[in-house]
Length: 339
Length: 257
Image (cartoon, rainbow over the protein chains, first blue to last red):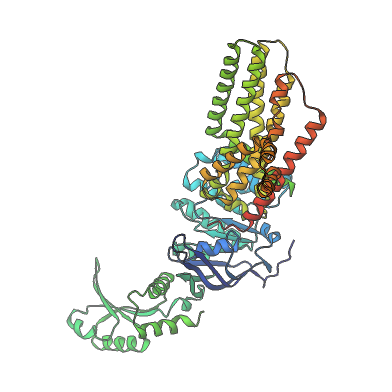
């Protein structure tokens, strides 16, 4: 068994590329373009990207289900072609399928065996993992009788049955109801606390923000940036928000210089919310508002969110509404530090 | 290593025997074997011999049909439903997967042949009140034949994407294997040097399934000698091992998208 140090990288991908030849045109298409990332011991790494960005293809390369065109993948310091490290890896595919006529017990026993467990270890592991995914009462059910959510639970059970040190999760929350999602989050939190590293591909950004330490954002087969999401500043520059009350008389005057203005009407009255990119501009407006005896409801700095960052990077890559040269340069400056 | 193969084999067997397709095949096979036997029973002449002959032929045909259908569609189903992804993400070699699947299918086929053979023995019992063990021996040789046919099906399904094509090629090779005894006669009949060279290669490469068919011998009451039995078993296993080896080589570099 490989000894793993706390500083070790459990997964290291270096300039990984994968290309395939389209059936009819015989044209080579690059699904992944020289991506590099690493996952450290005990770290939860979010692997984000739009549909078709290349996340699942990358995961398949890591697991050797498809052969990379170039680059290297190392799992616990050894090439991904070396199967000896695979017993330390668990994999939950997106929308997993299993054998229809096997029972949950039989299926999990098989995966336990394939993961390297033997004898009594198998029975104990199956029992434990069924309890963990709350499927003990369905252990003798045939797989074909299970709903999508329950199949997803079996999928997770087979992935964690041998207590892997690296868990690769492809859309783990897919097909789960809110309770299932909460339970899965709880299981992942426990695994994280036990030191299991995870590479998690997901579209549910709130779950990613809750669980992950770092994220990479992938678009069109390339990684656009890797961000430490515990450090809020890495998610973007954020903005300054000033909310004013009793502003009506000075509305035109107060609207000058802000990035955006929104008038909010609620039960307590009417508010003007002003957004500023620069602190200096926000403070100038604050001084002005004070001088005009407008009521200051709040003034704060709001951090950027993962969603803002994701949309910005993916839209930028697709040539969307952030296409101008100056904006592109600004985006590079804002995200460049975290790369 | 062996435990992994056996576990894959056991679950392939479980999955196959519980599938509805197999039940309908077994039902149909038992019905046809009984009908063949019944047809033999109403013919004039040596009734029992005809019953056994038709019965064994039906067992062989149905067992081969099962081998071709399940073997050819096996990998396609695994790839289509992506069940193979979970298996190969574990420390499992691709050749172990193929050998396990082959073994699992053979277990299913063995059960099916045993059931049909038992049916035929019971039917024959009504005409001659004794258990004809030679029917079991002939069924064992049918099983040897299936070891090869199943490996052919797995070989083709490891290189071809369409199960229909894999099935067609497997069945063609089965027919060729059953007719391989005619090749030497063809070589004698062909005067030119070059075609006979190729025919010789074909003769040695094709599976000698004709040698594994002892039904004619059995219906006349002659049992297979221990040498014939051992040779047939070794030949079947060796041929299947070569084919599975080739399948593993092609399967090793296959991308599972």
